[in-house]
Image 1 (cartoon, rainbow, N blue to C red):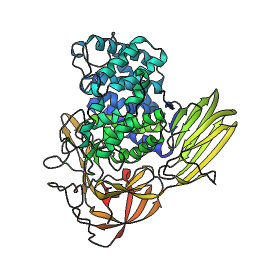
Image 2: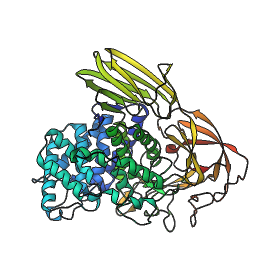
Image 3: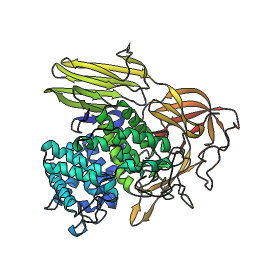
Image 4: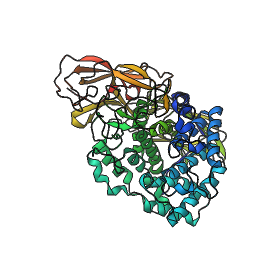
Length: 610
């Protein structure tokens, strides 16, 4: 089936308010400077250098290019365009585009071919550079010929991510379908992984590295059907929902992600979740919502984006974790054996390249693609999909229309829509209302409907809509008798105070130097607490220049907590036990402040109720 909604481009949709500030922090931080400080991008073979010529430079461009255009930053745009120029100029006469000589193509993992096709397609939506469709045509036709005659084949990462090639194929088919495109679609599907064969492996951690349980593969896999069904002539069987529920049951976290460090790690709140998995899960949910129109994907997306994404980054976005833990009381390297199942002892350190560099390059896609999901194009108008501060400039049947949404959501539940139409128009504005909203009010009047508001047409001039609603603060049940505190899409944590140490050094010829150095966060405050009641008081503090600031969080919740004998994980001094040793209160309850999960670098999120 065709997608219910489609995406606007960065030329039409711009972030505002706290979202723009978040993108500006990213531009001034690691993502905005990787091509200056990190050899794997700065000196990438994709740009004529001698460093890595596979996934890292394309990963970086996937976030850097839309970020530059969303911010309308001329200096960033010029750097992005130079990188695109260098990739296009190095395309071979036969269409091959990856930086590897002909004699090495046979063993080259085709994941990079599929990835650069997806990235250049996204770049085209930003730049409208007409060289890109031609380059993609030659690249994909070359891939078709080499797959057909056996010169190359889908193996390893390419076999597990085969569906990503359909992003470029879709653009090409829209510009003119040819028989070889359908044949390439069948070749990719026929040589790619069918995840139904391995889903039984997701029910328990294996403590070994496998493609079948690799967390990033699985988060990308969720978007397989939206990308491929129409081109393969298949019906959507709802596999994304089936796979999501199964992954959540056996590996779900309080913030809507799955544990995976790097492979599925079970249901414990002390296991890690890879940052690449966070942004790829967001990408899948964005596409699933656009494809199905099912608002459950939008709410799942909000939970991941407003909690897990900011939590894995320092406030200035110069450092990141490879894996985050829901209950995370310390982020210093383990002195002996790693606590993680398939990651090394420093994977939870905040730094330039903890454990492995894929997340260093890839995390930048998270915020820009979220910003591009604020408004979606509907068959009869526009959908306000995510209530993010944004401005949309578009046309409906030839009439210019501008929609501005002013809001501090998810920190406040107030939205101000301003619609400016240059003439009378029958454009409909749909506004998704979260399922947890109650006491919905529109322009001050009580509104009984939930799910979606619809405005049928607009007169020439300005129309304004004020939307308000309330949300409850609730204790959600988690496995092992633990609870997490949620208010709307925000999960709240007990912050653990940290002693932060800057760590500068050289490793494998790569310098870690301030501000792109590593940081050790050593927990120095008590964390062995439990909820001692169900009464909570919300304190609104205002959104600062750093939206997810620990020292100035936009919301705080007062809760009664008491100490318990929690205990440490066996053999570790810096990891709490997955489940408390005892739930008996050790003292009287006291008022404690909880802050949004995304604001806390160290935190306790899943606690018992005693």
